[in-house]
Length: 226
Length: 334
Image (cartoon, rainbow over all chains, first blue to last red; front, side, top):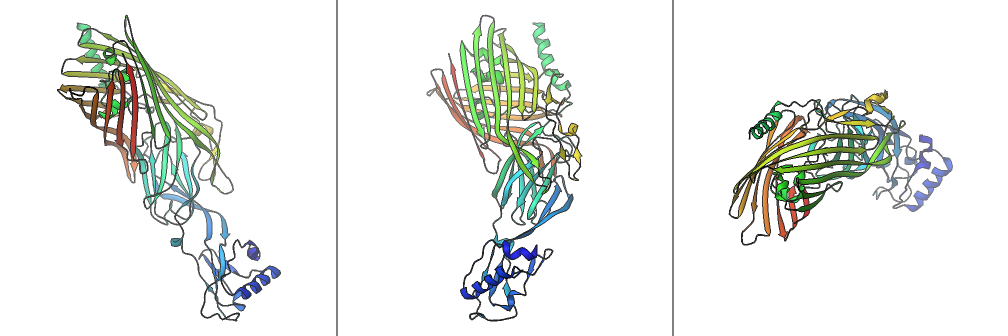
């Protein structure tokens, strides 16, 4: 994966030091070796550099989407019962370029390059794609019930509201940032007979809304079968 | 005379004796007209055809013919529509009404086995209709009885539900004070029977395939909830005061409604109302789970122009996004 990293760059932004950038880009393409990142420690979400530091200073790389695509399952009736399963990993390199480093005067050789990582706080809180219930329609009166699945752009405090066809609220859950149900990546909340302590919803359509800081991120609808 | 008191006794005792066993069928009891909703959903005192949804005994207020239409939309998704007609026959008043609820473009989903994520495979619609055929007979100027046969049907995706039941009610009409009593879904053995043609499968959290019987609604039943309504109307010069007690749910909870209507004698065509009502809702709010009584207020205005009625009602909603409900209804009577 890492040997092809240089070929998967989506955007390269050259801000300054055009000459140095061109040289580095040529070296990168011709050698087809990992120039910008030699190793990636997924656990620590960091990128290590060494080869590029032989060519330029003031290089600043940034990425917005380095994440593990994880499947989080949370029992909506009891958050402590959830389990995590790692499904796959994924890397998206958004931008790499040169920062306005005072140390850099043209092309020079230094030992370290400055790499910064965009913090989650800088990205917009959103639900990527649709929040969907599977299966839909579903029987609440079963052990399985259904799951509400949604992908979050980052860890965030999240509320799930659910309403019946009269716009009366039937369910509300609040998940703290980073907790199950409110983590960056794909989250799943289970809805079954335990959700209402054994009580069953009437067959019909129910509407859910995902809310962060009072802003509605997305909404959807599901149907309960008898 | 004796049979009348026996009937009264029966109607009042039956609700207390009844026990609910199965899950309650969704019954669109949000109201049958904007007029009724702006008065706090107090039922039994409509003077147009939509009374078939409230208390069939109230059909006596229609002279020859009446028709009524009602429409609203909730959360930009749920369409409510009703249409009713009532006319006088030599043997009494007859009313017919249909109240429908529909939601369109509901996503049918599947699970991507590789990613574990959900995606849309198609869309389906949800429809729920209640039809009523009512008959009313007056034993005197003050006492009126009525009965309705109700037919329920619901369809969505591969699921269909059908059932029928009946309502029985009476009304005592004096000059200043009216009393309405109605029992809805009085046939306790009659339930909604479901069929489900789906043969789909699903996988649970651990990746195991879920038995089709766990997913299918074939042969399932839902109970038609027994409901009793005790309503009063008191008229005082320019005002009419309304009050209602209604029993709902498994534990026969009482929910209350009150309403006040302003109909000045110097503007007989103008009505302005305000009302408050309670609703029993099963909720799971954070760690609190249970059946809760919620309160809401409504208000609105109406015009009665030579037998043509226009009514509007407004109600606050607790929905985080669509927090206002608007209702419109129109009726023609002569």
